[in-house]
Image: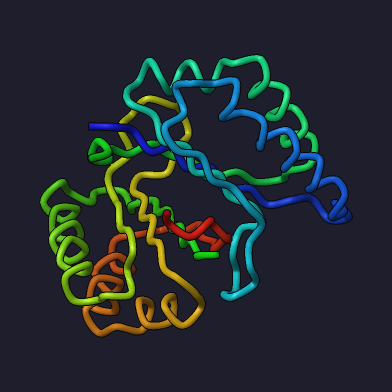
Length: 101
Length: 101
């Protein structure tokens, strides 16, 4: 059984596309430096639905140790600092998923 | 490019594990009846982190038509009615993900 971590964010008024690109740049390097990440996806809301959050991250790890390794990795902490400086709301959880085949 | 749909819920005070099991039962049959679902995971928050939402759903589809097919499918609508009757808060978005290999 693996763990799927999900985090959704709403950006503050006035956050620019360039600032979001900075977040994306900080996140996209994480799989290369955090081997505990089995899967890693993130992105801007596509604008299909009403009342959505603005940005989402889905991180798959094997177990709680893997989640902690991701959460506490300095490169993730650096990305998180950028996100915290831009976000006004956050929704997150971790749920169990099957192990990959 | 595919679409990853994410929805997180907080349950009202007093929602029981049996009621959540009813939600899980309604969701777990969806992949068999909605072929547009490329991937479908859901579950209860594991209690690893503070201030989390209570339940999450991650649905992967090929494109916006696939998302609409999922959203509007009567069996999904039936599951959604149960969820709406139990939830006090919802956070969701759709973002782009790579197509599967």
